[in-house]
Image (cartoon, rainbow, N blue to C red):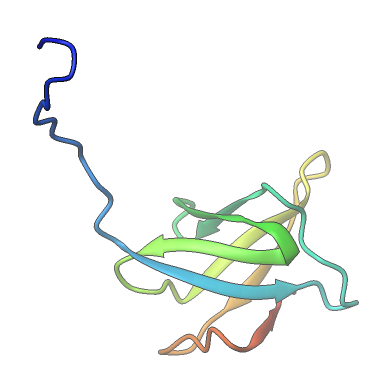
Length: 94
């Protein structure tokens, strides 16, 4: 291509639905920013964002997700969802 030319480029895009879920620990403290969120099969489905907000990208919401609490000791907490997710609700990671 020459300078200033418009070139068609194809990109693979993630077509899964994004979910934004507020979560916290039982004592009210936030989950650790940047930690991975994994489903019940151990697959990475998202990340913990600012303000303890989970960013999950899946076609269907998993029945349960886990988030590490202490990676050195291998401790994690879990959030169980019903058939639907209320994105205005704060979920407790137990």
